[in-house]
Length: 267
View 1 (cartoon, rainbow, N blue to C red):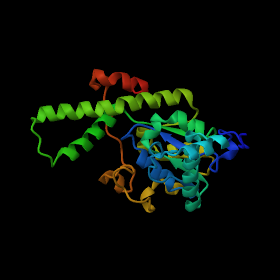
View 2: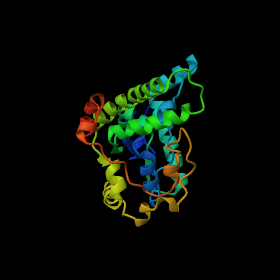
View 3: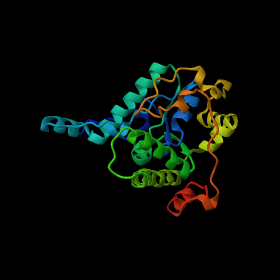
View 4: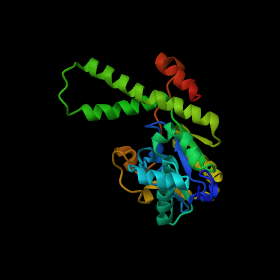
C-alpha cells in the first residue's frame, strides 16, 4: 500500500514556497543582478547553485522498492533535496526571499516549475551581440596561454562558432520560458542605465520595500567571485554598476544573430 500522505507536487510540501529564479543566458549580467538584489536586507541572492547537476540515485533494488512503496520517484526525491538546499541557504542568510540565478535554469525551467508551482521568475535579457562578444572574450582569455597550431583568423572563427553554439540554444530556451511562465522581464541595458527604476520594479515584484543601498552593491560582501559560481572578472569585482556597451544599429547585426535579437526584442 502506498503510504504517501501528500502529493509529490503539493506546494505545501515545499520548505521554500516561492523561490525566485533568474532565467537568462550566460554573460547576461546575472551576477550583477544577483549582487544588486543580495544587497537588499530581505533578499538572499547567493552564488549559482547549479541544481541541474544535483541528482538523487537509487542504486539498490531494496532502496528502489522502499521509495516506490512510499510513492517517491527519483525526480521527486531530487526536488526534495533541491528544496532542502534552498531552505538551508535562506535560513542561514536570515532573509525572507531567495533568488537563484544559475544560467542553466534556462534549460530546466519546466522542472523548476514542477518542483515549485509557486516559483517566481525574473527574465534577464541582454543584446545577443553583447552576449556573444562577452563570451568570446572569456574564450580568448582561456586560449591566451595555450599553444595554438592555427592562425589568428582560424582561432577567431572557432571562438565565434563555439560561442554561437553555446548561446543560441539558451536564447531559445529563455524565449520559450518567457512564453509559458509569468514573471518580470529585466533588460541588462536598463539595469545599468536606470538602476533605480529597475530595482524599484523588482522590489515591487518581490514584495519588498525598495532600499537605496541596492544601487551600491559594493558596500556589502557577496562571497567570492570565481569561475563556476558566476562572473569573476574585474568589472563585477568593482562593486559599481557600470554602463553597458553601445547597442549596435540594425545593420550592424550579423544575419546569424538577427533571429536571436528578434527573439529578445532587440531588432
